[in-house]
Length: 186
Image 1 (cartoon, rainbow, N blue to C red):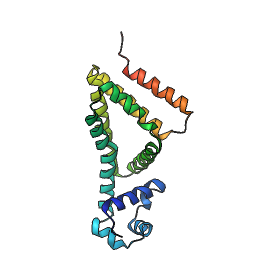
Image 2: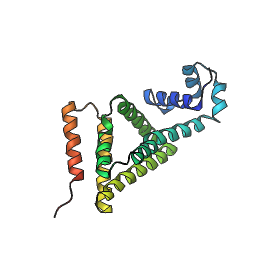
Image 3: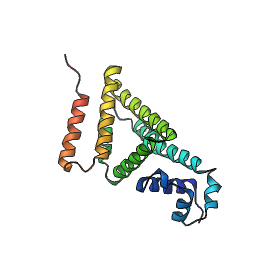
Protein backbone atom coordinates (compact mmCIF):
# COMPACT_ATOMS: atom_id res chain seq x y z
CA UNK A 1 0.00 0.00 0.00
CA UNK A 2 1.47 3.33 -1.09
CA UNK A 3 0.84 6.01 1.54
CA UNK A 4 0.91 9.74 0.88
CA UNK A 5 1.97 12.49 3.28
CA UNK A 6 -1.75 13.24 3.70
CA UNK A 7 -2.31 9.69 4.98
CA UNK A 8 0.36 10.13 7.64
CA UNK A 9 -0.99 13.57 8.59
CA UNK A 10 -4.52 12.19 8.86
CA UNK A 11 -3.29 9.33 11.07
CA UNK A 12 -1.28 11.76 13.22
CA UNK A 13 -4.32 14.02 13.59
CA UNK A 14 -6.46 11.08 14.71
CA UNK A 15 -3.90 10.08 17.35
CA UNK A 16 -3.60 13.72 18.48
CA UNK A 17 -7.38 13.94 18.93
CA UNK A 18 -7.83 10.51 20.51
CA UNK A 19 -4.80 10.61 22.81
CA UNK A 20 -2.43 13.61 22.87
CA UNK A 21 0.55 15.09 21.09
CA UNK A 22 2.80 12.84 23.16
CA UNK A 23 1.22 9.77 21.52
CA UNK A 24 1.96 11.07 18.00
CA UNK A 25 5.09 8.99 17.41
CA UNK A 26 6.42 7.42 14.23
CA UNK A 27 6.27 3.88 15.59
CA UNK A 28 2.65 4.31 16.78
CA UNK A 29 1.58 5.76 13.42
CA UNK A 30 3.40 3.08 11.41
CA UNK A 31 1.77 0.34 13.47
CA UNK A 32 -1.67 1.93 13.05
CA UNK A 33 -1.16 2.25 9.30
CA UNK A 34 0.29 -1.28 9.11
CA UNK A 35 3.49 -0.17 7.40
CA UNK A 36 7.15 0.08 8.32
CA UNK A 37 8.76 3.15 9.81
CA UNK A 38 10.73 3.48 6.56
CA UNK A 39 7.56 4.51 4.78
CA UNK A 40 7.34 7.50 7.11
CA UNK A 41 10.86 8.67 6.29
CA UNK A 42 10.07 8.58 2.58
CA UNK A 43 7.73 11.55 3.18
CA UNK A 44 9.08 13.35 6.28
CA UNK A 45 12.52 14.21 7.61
CA UNK A 46 11.51 13.48 11.20
CA UNK A 47 8.65 13.78 13.69
CA UNK A 48 9.01 17.56 13.86
CA UNK A 49 8.59 17.76 10.09
CA UNK A 50 5.37 15.74 10.39
CA UNK A 51 4.12 18.00 13.19
CA UNK A 52 4.86 21.13 11.14
CA UNK A 53 2.96 19.62 8.21
CA UNK A 54 0.06 18.64 10.50
CA UNK A 55 -0.22 22.23 11.73
CA UNK A 56 -0.02 23.57 8.17
CA UNK A 57 -2.72 21.13 7.07
CA UNK A 58 -4.98 22.21 9.94
CA UNK A 59 -4.38 25.92 9.24
CA UNK A 60 -5.20 25.45 5.56
CA UNK A 61 -8.32 23.35 6.14
CA UNK A 62 -9.71 25.24 9.11
CA UNK A 63 -8.96 28.77 7.96
CA UNK A 64 -7.63 29.34 4.46
CA UNK A 65 -10.11 27.03 2.68
CA UNK A 66 -13.07 28.44 4.62
CA UNK A 67 -12.10 32.04 3.89
CA UNK A 68 -11.54 31.20 0.21
CA UNK A 69 -14.92 29.46 0.03
CA UNK A 70 -16.64 32.50 1.56
CA UNK A 71 -14.82 34.85 -0.80
CA UNK A 72 -15.85 32.81 -3.86
CA UNK A 73 -19.48 32.65 -2.71
CA UNK A 74 -19.89 36.38 -3.30
CA UNK A 75 -22.22 36.63 -0.29
CA UNK A 76 -22.77 40.02 1.28
CA UNK A 77 -21.05 40.70 4.64
CA UNK A 78 -24.23 40.20 6.70
CA UNK A 79 -24.79 36.80 5.10
CA UNK A 80 -21.15 35.93 5.85
CA UNK A 81 -21.57 36.84 9.52
CA UNK A 82 -24.67 34.63 9.69
CA UNK A 83 -22.83 31.83 7.89
CA UNK A 84 -19.91 32.06 10.32
CA UNK A 85 -22.26 31.96 13.30
CA UNK A 86 -23.78 28.75 11.95
CA UNK A 87 -20.48 26.90 11.37
CA UNK A 88 -20.49 25.12 14.76
CA UNK A 89 -23.85 23.53 13.87
CA UNK A 90 -22.75 21.71 10.72
CA UNK A 91 -23.21 18.18 12.08
CA UNK A 92 -20.43 15.58 12.04
CA UNK A 93 -18.02 17.83 10.12
CA UNK A 94 -18.37 20.56 12.76
CA UNK A 95 -17.88 18.05 15.59
CA UNK A 96 -14.76 16.64 13.92
CA UNK A 97 -13.36 20.14 13.35
CA UNK A 98 -14.05 21.08 16.98
CA UNK A 99 -12.25 17.96 18.23
CA UNK A 100 -9.20 18.75 16.10
CA UNK A 101 -9.27 22.40 17.18
CA UNK A 102 -9.43 21.46 20.87
CA UNK A 103 -6.55 18.97 20.52
CA UNK A 104 -4.37 21.50 18.70
CA UNK A 105 -5.13 24.21 21.26
CA UNK A 106 -4.24 21.80 24.09
CA UNK A 107 -0.96 21.04 22.30
CA UNK A 108 -0.31 24.76 21.83
CA UNK A 109 -0.55 25.34 25.57
CA UNK A 110 2.83 23.63 26.00
CA UNK A 111 4.55 23.84 22.61
CA UNK A 112 5.89 27.05 21.06
CA UNK A 113 5.63 25.86 17.43
CA UNK A 114 1.96 24.94 17.85
CA UNK A 115 1.32 28.16 19.83
CA UNK A 116 2.69 30.28 16.99
CA UNK A 117 0.46 28.59 14.42
CA UNK A 118 -2.62 28.89 16.65
CA UNK A 119 -1.84 32.59 17.21
CA UNK A 120 -1.49 33.10 13.44
CA UNK A 121 -4.77 31.27 12.78
CA UNK A 122 -6.59 33.29 15.45
CA UNK A 123 -5.24 36.56 14.05
CA UNK A 124 -6.20 35.64 10.47
CA UNK A 125 -9.70 34.54 11.46
CA UNK A 126 -10.28 37.62 13.61
CA UNK A 127 -9.03 39.91 10.85
CA UNK A 128 -11.32 38.30 8.30
CA UNK A 129 -14.38 38.52 10.55
CA UNK A 130 -13.55 42.13 11.45
CA UNK A 131 -13.44 42.96 7.72
CA UNK A 132 -17.01 41.65 7.42
CA UNK A 133 -18.14 44.02 10.16
CA UNK A 134 -16.23 46.96 8.66
CA UNK A 135 -17.99 46.25 5.35
CA UNK A 136 -21.28 46.51 7.27
CA UNK A 137 -20.35 50.05 8.31
CA UNK A 138 -18.96 49.49 11.80
CA UNK A 139 -15.86 51.40 12.91
CA UNK A 140 -12.57 49.48 12.94
CA UNK A 141 -12.59 49.38 16.75
CA UNK A 142 -16.22 48.24 16.94
CA UNK A 143 -15.65 45.71 14.12
CA UNK A 144 -12.68 44.25 16.02
CA UNK A 145 -14.71 43.84 19.19
CA UNK A 146 -17.63 42.27 17.31
CA UNK A 147 -15.24 39.94 15.51
CA UNK A 148 -13.77 38.82 18.84
CA UNK A 149 -17.24 38.24 20.27
CA UNK A 150 -18.37 36.23 17.22
CA UNK A 151 -15.15 34.20 17.17
CA UNK A 152 -15.39 33.48 20.90
CA UNK A 153 -19.01 32.43 20.44
CA UNK A 154 -18.10 30.10 17.56
CA UNK A 155 -15.36 28.42 19.57
CA UNK A 156 -17.59 28.12 22.63
CA UNK A 157 -20.46 26.54 20.68
CA UNK A 158 -18.01 24.15 19.03
CA UNK A 159 -16.44 23.06 22.29
CA UNK A 160 -19.66 22.92 24.31
CA UNK A 161 -21.84 21.40 21.59
CA UNK A 162 -23.74 19.29 24.11
CA UNK A 163 -25.10 22.27 26.02
CA UNK A 164 -28.83 22.68 25.52
CA UNK A 165 -31.31 21.37 23.02
CA UNK A 166 -31.22 22.06 19.28
CA UNK A 167 -33.86 24.72 19.87
CA UNK A 168 -31.80 26.39 22.61
CA UNK A 169 -28.66 26.37 20.46
CA UNK A 170 -30.65 27.91 17.59
CA UNK A 171 -31.99 30.58 19.94
CA UNK A 172 -28.44 31.39 21.10
CA UNK A 173 -27.24 31.64 17.50
CA UNK A 174 -30.11 33.95 16.54
CA UNK A 175 -29.48 36.09 19.64
CA UNK A 176 -25.77 36.42 18.88
CA UNK A 177 -26.46 37.33 15.25
CA UNK A 178 -29.00 39.97 16.27
CA UNK A 179 -26.66 41.36 18.91
CA UNK A 180 -23.67 41.55 16.59
CA UNK A 181 -25.48 42.96 13.57
CA UNK A 182 -27.39 45.60 15.52
CA UNK A 183 -25.90 49.08 15.13
CA UNK A 184 -24.65 50.86 18.21
CA UNK A 185 -27.01 53.62 19.28
CA UNK A 186 -26.42 56.62 21.45
